[in-house]
Length: 584
Image 1 (cartoon, rainbow, N blue to C red):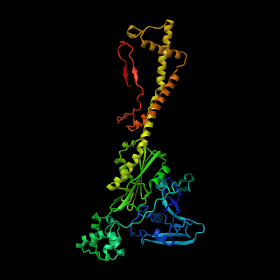
Image 2 (tube, rainbow, N blue to C red):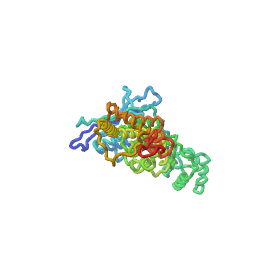
Image 3 (cartoon, rainbow, N blue to C red):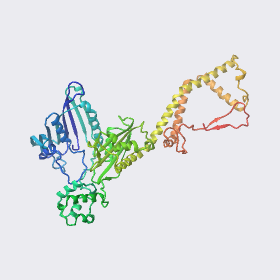
Image 4 (cartoon, rainbow, N blue to C red):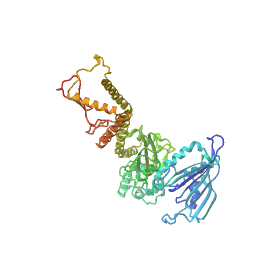
């Protein structure tokens, strides 16, 4: 469909179980340029009606979407399709985006003769300024089984086309409670540049294609044919090619119509093996752009952070390609682990994702831990968009791109690595904050038990002191008594002074279990704030991400006490023994 607003309406009737098949009237509408009145029957009712004189990046896979819908309708219900369209022949007139007439066509297809069977074909004056195309078809299907696929396709389409407004309205005539509506608004006003059609590159041709080009060519000589009907072939290169083919009967003034099948085979072999041609540069392609890709992801996925990158253009078998990628962390509905979204020529690929080059590279070729990303715990979104004049699909369904193409695999890997490199600095800070928060929670977890124990010790000391003052204190057994206290020394006087002061505060209820707990919580907060202020968190963030510092730098680790602890012995030692200093 053309760019712009799209709508889909489904109405279904189902009897019996919810999984039973029903009939659905589907309406798809856009506000694009429409179709010419006389071209509608052949565009929709004739399979493989087009012809290619060149190559161009096109949206889709086969170019048979509307025709297959017509065939499906004929097979399941036998009801013809209805098409309403307004063709705008003057694209340069922005004040008049609509066509002068509105065409209406009701048609079927003769499958055996491969030609349209037109039942109604009329046009009227476009008095209401109608724009676009509306396609209506009645089919048999199963909404319950394929609802998730349709919703997923629309979601991914909104990501890759942020410049379009997409709407889906589903109405169930049998059960109105199952009605559903989805809308993705337009986020970007920046449209990708249109793709340009270019001539075939010599390394991309085959026997059948060369035969078709020779039959359609208006060139008088084979040298002129090589320079005008193929790309990247100059006059000097063309003459050199003809000279190498002289043994096969080629000469400069040879007419293209005189080339035999055997000579075509020899010409194709030489064109595909020669290294004299410049590789296609990708200027003819129309990638989405990093700006639009980022907007699409933010609009639909709503991640915490996203990074985008575009790799340099590459070529495979004479066809240029461009890889754009994005990596996001988080999201409103993202799940843990790696979720890969794949796009080819701005079309979502939903099936056979495990064999796709994007999935293989994301799971096997990217070392996520090097970029501070936990591929098992983090909610990672990997988005890979590939545009090319010929996307190298695998399989008949064209649902995935194989990873056996080295050039494409390396391009996807470079793009994803560039995204991860952008995320690394952000994730380093995020991991440091997360580790600091976890450490703080772990310390606060033990505050109630510690405060209870400390207050219990102080309270027992207070009671013992009161008992000693009353003369009712029980003396400990001689074996359990501490010996050789430093009675009368400065250390003893200092410790006794601290103890008396604490016990007096306990007696006055200035120190309680709650106050000790609050003091410990404040101390934990102050310690964490000190770590952040001294840059410990940021320096630690470049380490392991779990509280260790593998780099061995000068930064203090998270969890390390900011001031040293002095352990002073008080029992059974002489005064000339120095104090013990320990970093913990």
